[in-house]
Length: 329
Image 1 (cartoon, rainbow, N blue to C red):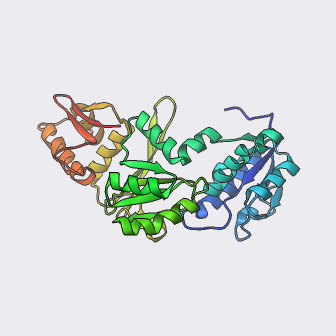
Image 2 (cartoon, rainbow, N blue to C red):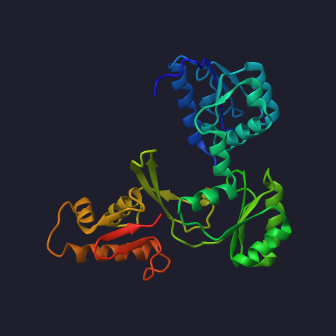
Image 3 (cartoon, rainbow, N blue to C red):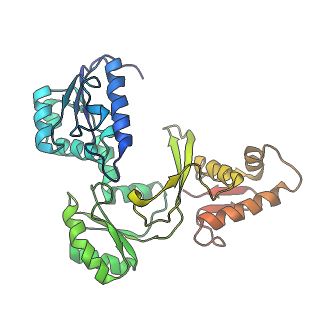
């Protein structure tokens, strides 16, 4: 993409103090963003309330505002500086929330400021629990049974309909603030009022709990042409349900064999597509040899035992008779 010559001044919103769920990676990303923008000749204005980071060093940005990261203060900075654009994405949840507040209060329109990177519509879709659920369902992505609630009464009914145990996920909160697991109604009632009050939009997702499941992650980048590359895979040493701040993640995964890793990587990069026996064998083993279909079946069975709730009745890794296998979307 060609350099934007219509932009002169860019405001970068930092992430503020390091907290659980929003850690040093944003300081690193924000610092690199400021330096890259300066290198391209833009005037960079930084708003970040964390003095204990190199990001707020006077050499990183042209101007630094070490003010509280609230709508009131950031709006004053925007009105005073009149930037052409704002970069909110490297400010973590704090930056995204502020971008949405500036948008909804009409400050971006008033000052004719453009959001760079993720649009306000995409931020809203990713952060609003109901919109995100609808997006996943429209794409055919599997989602756990869940209900969006705005009141205690709605929440109690939702938990009863879904069935305990459930997990509470407040919308637009940082690092899981206000969320938690409930095994019964008594535990649920002790959490729901706090969850609703801590959500800026008083919205909570009540979801079926999968506490105790193994968690394996793949970082996959996919473009508009459906071209996908896998950056890495990771495994949480702790089961689902342990908070991020108390959990350890290792890269690469430790309980997948190399062949299982290669198979899962291939399926994730080609979700929804049928991969034939020949394609799988050549991609993972590098060749087709005598009885390779049986060898492949053994590895698929072992992989299902690790990723399927009921390996004998797979939901995700599906056999397509006579052809091969497909990873469901």
